Image (cartoon, rainbow, N blue to C red; front, side, top):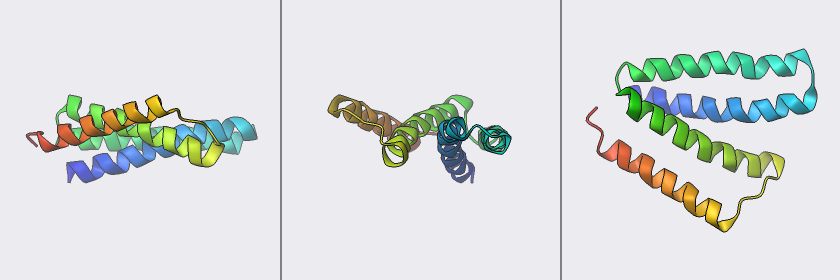
Amino acid sequence: MAWIILGIAVITEIIWALSLKWAGTHGTWQAASVPIILSFVNMGLLALAMRGLPAGTAYAVWTGLGAVGVIIGGVLLFGDRVSAPQAGFMALIVIGVVGTKLFATS
């Protein structure tokens, strides 16, 4: 169950980070409230996942997949560009996360 919660936390992390850029383009208090609310949800989910997973494992998966997801989201939603070397290093992050999951004790 902790891995499922962590997966939801990763998705929330990606949406949170992308909402920061979105809120910056809209400049209203309603838009600014979205990332604030998501940050509380995000941290709560990460803390909940850490009840069943080692803190280092949970944080590494959360940050790694969050970073890759934000890059992909930036490309899809905001037209950000990714170079071939960046894509290669993103693949290494995903490989590291998969290895972390495969060899986790929880």
